[in-house]
Image 1 (cartoon, rainbow, N blue to C red):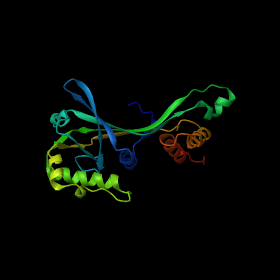
Image 2: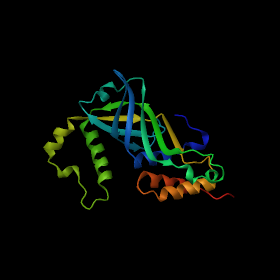
Image 3: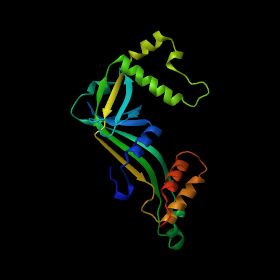
Image 4: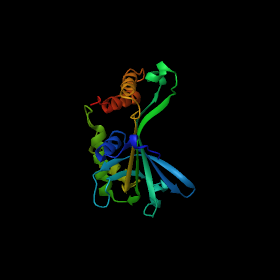
Length: 217
């Protein structure tokens, strides 16, 4: 991924924060017929000596050939996409002066690299599912838990999935927030995105840009 210095994000807590906030990753690998991608919800665990950038964990259907290719020498890559939005040149000061501006697209993204491991263990899978469920059900008035379903039903479903784990050896972040623009332009972008008529990614990106704008000393 092409990452100019002004857009490079290397703080581990920030990179992990994007993964936690946007856990659906695209796992890219070499399959039997070339490049392929699987879209999976991941959790990110703390670094270890063997995984200096943390550990990604997820599960796949047993019928998915992904896990059968684990354990090789090749790394896979998981892409996590954060907030993104179109940036109109109308928000730039130079547009008003000379018109010499063009649109762009700002975004945040993390690329995570590491070897793929398969974990075919019911206890490990149950622990993972309980953590994922607790996290995604948090905040609901009546959170669903695995115990809400019959034990034999859960046991049957457990046999139909396999766990995967990726100890991360490289983690690359790109925060393209207009850091190469003037503070005036950055503030204008943040303001414009905050007023977007379709709330969501655009407003989230605007909040990131606003947090990145610091007055000149």
